[in-house]
Structures are given as structure tokens and as C-alpha cells.
Length: 140
Image 1 (cartoon, rainbow, N blue to C red):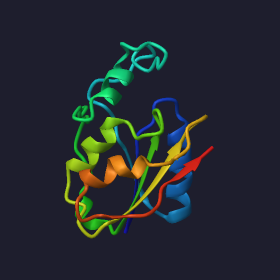
Image 2 (cartoon, helix red, strand yellow):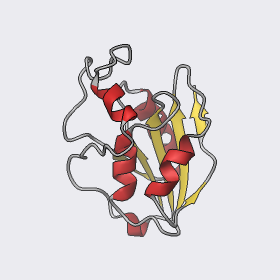
Image 3 (cartoon, rainbow, N blue to C red):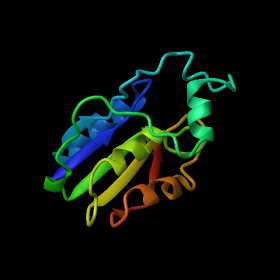
Image 4 (cartoon, helix red, strand yellow):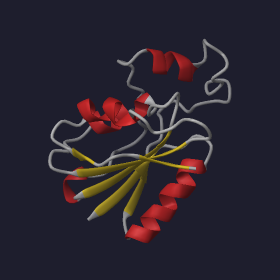
């Protein structure tokens, strides 16, 4: 079975996730932060904004609202997120650290207006030991 799990702040990643889920015949799960992001939280030009402070501290793990899906029933997980400064938002680490992904194929995809995917997997792999990560792709 396949799952598309995604985090979206502007709707771009959500749109791509829904298309992938439909194409793949996959279940879909939205990663929703327990404390929603406001426009001010996402102001990357403000050095004191929430998104900047979370990205500066690699140990931050924003909480996820509600229950996570039962990962044990999925073989492939498409994992979508926006790129923040070329990396996944820390809530993606929260998601990966909240379940056992051992032996699961994780297929990352990201949306971004400017950042390349680059080394984004470097931030993901330690959060899901034993998972099989495919090379991530940026979707414009």
C-alpha cells in the first residue's frame, strides 16, 4: 500500500500531494502542526520569525495535531513539504521520528519557488533509521 504524507503552508504542496495520491492510488495524510503557522510565523525576511528560529535549531520538533496514520500498513510513503532555505521544515522530522519506518521506501518531493532540493535528504535520513530513501525531487 502507498501513502502520501504532506505538510503545506500555502497550498502548493497540498495540490501536488493530492495529484500524486490520485495518480498512485494512495491514501493521503496531511501533517498539520498543533500550533498553526501564521503569516508572521512564515515571514522568512524577519530573522525572529518562527520559521527562521525553527530552521536555525536542528533539534526543534514542532508537534503534530491529531493521530498519525498507521505506518505499518504502507510499503511506500511519498513525503511532501515546502523547502525552507533548501531543507524540509522541522515538522517533517517530527513526523519521521513519530513512527517506525524501517524497511519502508520513502519518496520525498518538495515545492519551492527558488530553492533546489540539494541536500534536503541529509536532514531526513537520521530521523527515520532503517528507511529506504529515494532521491528527493523539487516540483515547481
